[in-house]
Structure formats: structure tokens, C-alpha cells
Image (cartoon, rainbow, N blue to C red; front, side, top):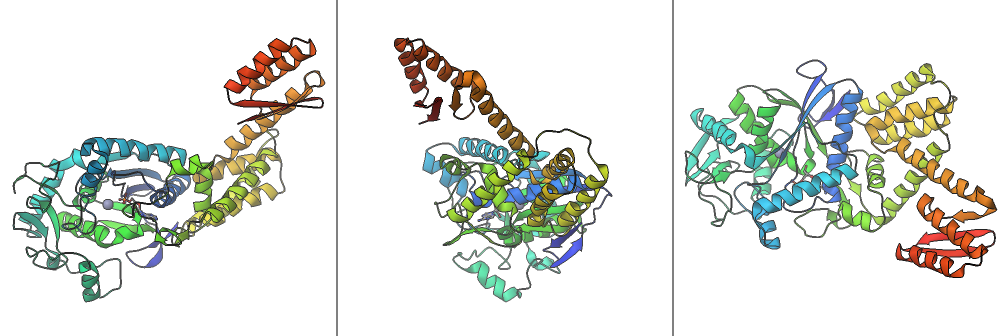
Length: 482
Ligand code: AMP
Ligand code: ZN
């Protein structure tokens, strides 16, 4: 498999430390608010990557942190504490906020068919490990104590800027923008590993440490969580592109200084979901969530389909019109899969293998998901029987996660239920194929036929109470939810 590597700025063959095994790490959510659909674009593409690796036969150990402490709004020692901001906004404790939004995040993931990582570790659960690593960094003289805080000394590294070709001065100015100077720092890019003196006097979560009572910096959690659960050699690190600097840059600095050898080879960065007014962001306050899409009647998997239609290394513009187009294409695709019928006949293994090769090529080409989706259309057109087409699509969907077979089967069942009701006594019922409602509609028709109008009205009221409106038409009835 070839993947673009942000660390080398090239598409490279993906090689793992241990053959056929991938140690994979993903920066998890900061749980002070709902994830927006931009965050979820990153998680969808990372999920597709994980599934593509598994589809390719790798055994994957995927680890994710939950940032429930220490994530400040801008750099490590400036800005506002996001968790505290969330707690104040909702008048709850920081831990209650963290629990609520962690659950909400995984609910959203479930709706989007995003698999839960093998290990999910909240930062607050591993403080001893952070203290151990920070102490070791001080012992190795990669870190120093100043003004009550512990800082990482970036001047000790041969190469600090890993992901960008900017020269140091440019970036240093970029980093300083809107950020107050911290007089304790020896170098302007030094970052905090542990705070005891913070301008946030009301910091809710604090722990004892060799440097006094305080809390960890933003970046240390990911290094420590990965080193603990992925081991010393990480094969693949993922996150949104905004994480590359300073977060991932600082993760590399700490981890390699601690380990004394190169840490992670492959860096996978998902580009942003943008609105017409720029990057979708939680801190701006206005953003779209999965629940909001559902309230507006959108199937979350149609959003997943929308994401898969474009490449992860290109910005994606969200508009309702773009989403509606994706919904139309997704529903049409499900109808076409449904039209294949059920699994009758034998699967042609030759055709199945040839299609798998094409699909694999799309994945191997830097996770070309739009090409992978095109493979589904090609399978529908393939010169083979329905059972083979369904087997091909089912196999692709292990990676795409669009529930194509499941939704196609549900659609066929619904249509079959409608057709069955139509056959009963020549009386046609058009609705949503709900057998319980159809039965009541039929009972009402029979009551009317027997001139038992009181019973017919009673059933109409019963249906109304369930939010169902029935309209009589020649030869039958139509019902709908109102
Ligand atoms: P956060 O919860 O803010 O820590 O972000 C969670 C993940 O979403 C990180 O990997 C971010 O890089 C990523 N992210 C943030 N904003 C966007 C966006 N507009 N589009 C895609 N990914 C994003
Ligand atoms: Zn991280």
C-alpha cells in the first residue's frame, strides 16, 4: 500500500516494523463539546484507513486517546482551557462534561459506522505514566523546570520542524501570533510538559507531581498513551491536518527524546471540512453535528458516503446542496443493489478475485476512496450473476462501511411487505410497509365493509394516536406518518 507521508512529503510504500502487523495511533477528541462533522470527517477517513489495512490482511492494533484534561485553546501554555470552558458553559463538573461528550462521540461514531479503536484511553487515567516520562526527559536534559513549570527544550533537537518546509523564523512568528510570550521559555518553541504555575488558577483537575501540584501539557498525553499501548515503534499516526504543528511536532520531539530512537514512520493527516466561511471549528461555536443532520432527516451514512467521494488530502467544502447530491447518489446506489435480488446462484470466484484486485489498487493508491466507490458501480455492471455482484459489494463494504447490502435487503423487504399487503383481498395498502399499521388499516377497511362505522372510526383514532393518517382511495387506502 502506498500512502502519502507528511513527514517525508512523499507518497511511500507503507512498511511496518513487524511484518503484517500495524501499530496505529489516532488523536482522539477533546470532549468539551459535541464532535462536529468536520472532526468526524477525520475519524471517517481514519476508519476507512484502518479497515483498508485489515482488508489487506494486516493485523491492526489501534489506539486512541480521549483528551479530558490539559488541552488549551492554542499553544500548550496559552489560551483557554477548553474542558473548563465546557464545564462553565453547562454548569457541570469537568468529569461530568468529559463523560457526557465521550459517550456522545462514540454514539456519533456508531451511527457513522466508525469502529471503536482497540484501546481508548482517557488522558486523566494515565497521569503516573506522564509523570514518569516527564521525569525521564528532565534526567536526559531534554526538559527543564522554570517558573514552576516543566518545559521541553527544543534547542536540544537536531531537527524540530518535521512536517513543514517553513523556515524556523517564519514558523516562530506564526506560533507567536495572538499568543502571549512566556518568559520562562529558553526558546520560543519550547512547550510545557507539566504545569504547576498556570494563569488558570481555577484549574479543576490537578495531581501531585515531583514539581508540585499541577496538570499535564497538551502534547504529552498522546506520546505516553501511544508508547504504552502501541509500544516503542509506532507504524502509523493519524490526525487532522491542524494537528501537524505544533501537536504532532511536539509529540515526535518528546517521544524520540524519551526513547532515544526514531518513533513513528508514517504520518497520515486528513484535510479539513470547510464551510463557505472557512474551517468548521468547535471553538467558533457554530457547527454541524450528526444529531443535527438526523433532525433534518439525513441518514448519517449519507454523510459518510459524501466524505468517501473525495480524497482525504483535499479540503472538502460542505454545503447542503453538496450533501443533497450525495444523498441522491447514495439512495440510488442502494436501490441498484436492492434490484440485484437475494443471494441465489453460486459466486464466481474468478470475477470476485479480479474485482478485489481493482478495489485493492484504489486503496493502495493513497486511499483513493472515490475510486473505491466507483468500484461498486463497476461491480453492478460486471458480466456476472447477482450472487457474485452481492459478494463483491459485500467485500468492498467491509472497508467503505456504507451498509450497502443491509440497506438494500431492508429496502427489498419493505417493498415485498408492501406488495404482500396489496395482494390481500384485492385491497391495496400503500404506506411504509409496516405490517402492524397495515393490519390496522385492513381491519378498518373490513369494519367499514361490514358497516361497523363505530369500529372503523375507533381504528382511525387509534392510528391517529400513533401519528398515522389514513386516506381512502379507490380499491384501497394510503397511510403516512404526519
Ligand atoms: P479536537 O476534538 O478539536 O481535538 O479534534 C478532533 C480531530 O478533528 C483532530 O484530529 C482534528 O485535527 C480534527 N479536525 C478539527 N477540525 C476539523 C475539520 N474542520 N475538518 C476535519 N478534521 C478536523
Ligand atoms: Zn494527539
